[in-house]
Image (tube, rainbow, N blue to C red):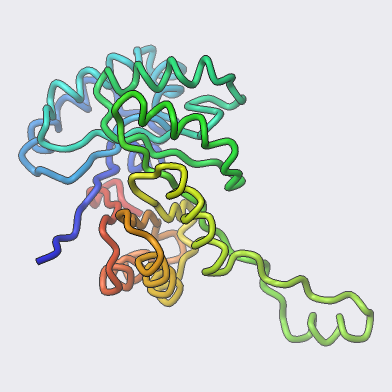
Length: 256
């Protein structure tokens, strides 16, 4: 029997999205015992805005944060961090020498899975992180950012016929995401994530995309979405029916 794996994002994306990433170390410590007993497949606890906010607004050391969580969780769940590829946890591109050292130290400090993405889905900006994470003994969870094409009304299309300005063809199709996923798999991705950070994926698209990915890939598929437009739960259910391996969640107070 196949089991659905759950990755909890409360201590990273949950608090980042709903609480401006202001949980301090003492607040994190207070919930670790409950999380350890929950035995989620994985917990995303580091990366994204966490290191920046921990230093900038809380005056704490982000490496201490990771050490505290690793001590509290142990091996009950895999710990995940979110990396912006060549930008790592920062806002500027870094050379390979920095990426290599950072990935090596992050894995040694307790990160089991590094989720790697590039905001423009430029896979060249992800290659170094994938290689260095795997060399350090971590799992490379490679993500492609989900978005949609502009919506054109019928009147726009009719106007285009008369003005000679054609409506541009769609870019962000199922085929687009499958091609990106296959390229990442060829680079050594251990997991592929559909990273829908804006909550735009519809239940229909979630079903079609997961089905297509499962037909083309041999690695686990993860769906990350939000409920901003209101159909996030329905999209997750559609993905589950069509064979998604992992879903991202957060506790109710930090979900959405």
